Image (tube, rainbow, N blue to C red; front, side, top):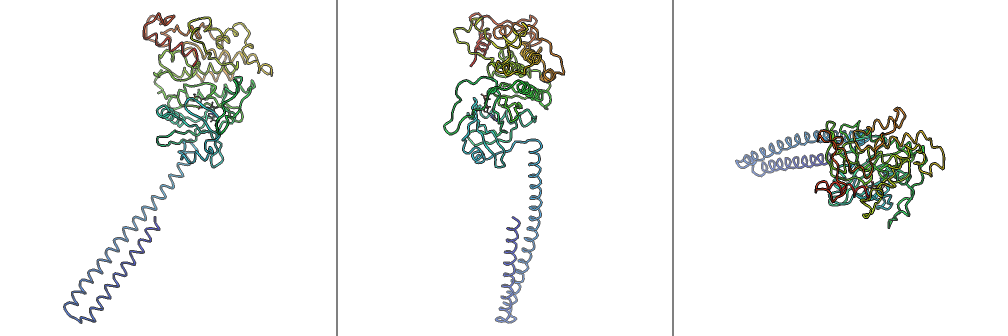
Length: 466
Ligand SMILES: Nc1ncnc2c1ncn2[C@@H]1O[C@H](COP(=O)(O)OP(=O)(O)OP(=O)(O)O)[C@@H](O)[C@H]1O
């Protein structure tokens, strides 16, 4: 730009000089051909005025240009400073970068390597130009995609923790899908390491879903449980606004190259003011991990994450999924609904003094499982799953208990789980809402009015698996 201005200046200068020379020559020619006549004086006067005007315009233009040049140099140095500051901030505070679609395509080699699929889109492996391995999540579906995209960026931008997956950047294509770019967790998600594999993984047309997984050994399971507890404790207690994750499950816990747990997927997360005790939210999340108060639409709080964490903790210990599919015919059969519900079995074995029976048999075979540690984990899991949200510990307390800084008592015997969750003590769940204490939902949908019927069927269908 400065160069352009300089060129312009030179051109103007040449024009001005040529004009002055032409005018001077015309005065000389007039003097020779007209002598000291009246016409000569007229021409000389006019030319003299023109020369003065050219000089004045040239000087003014020059002054204007030099001021402009000064401003432009100042602006260039300010924008350079800003660029340096921005790139510094990005490194320090982890501000996500805005990628161009072309960069995403190059990084993923045209979306060649699919590593996973969720309900909102697909995840591909990629490598940035500086060699950083990344996971690129392509969010599909206009409205939901936009919502999920915003929640994710808002939550992650305000949270930085070693046990949270790092959002490196994003990319928005007008009227197209959105992309989120994360650090790549080389060992994939926890579900592949605690649950026995269920048949073949899906193969994509161009690449393959990586066949990562196996049976995670006991000490690493305990480590991951603590990592996740720390990440949730940070979200709940150490951020400016409380961040509720609201979709804690093994698929959303990733493992890095050292099998450290990283909480991911903030697509359903919600920010909650420090002065709020609960907020209303429509039921989303994943069946089997949803707290009863959320299923009954009585408002949610960070204790919903604590509940989901309890379910995950028991799954980590047992290598068994908590959610079961109950067919329609058996929906109202109490014994069928109760049988095989893993948290219920874990609770019974704990009380019978047979807690080691709860542990994943593949892990027990390898040895190195400490019974006291198993008991600690099962007790913490059951405390987190207490029906009454107020009975659940905070995630900060969970960390204390798991790291053995706080003693863990056996949780109170509770008939809850699956069926008994239908009978909620309203006073406990929503203090001050009624004097009667128990607001019991009807035993069957036939017995109930419209409002409770809705809650009943929501609950039953949610408890029965997707
Ligand atoms: N940063 C990452 N590094 C490595 N693998 C990842 C990463 N993020 C996601 N994945 C893989 O992609 C899978 C799909 O992730 P995604 O978050 O889209 O869906 P989900 O959590 O499984 O399901 P949903 O979105 O329905 O809750 C994960 O289960 C995991 O195996």
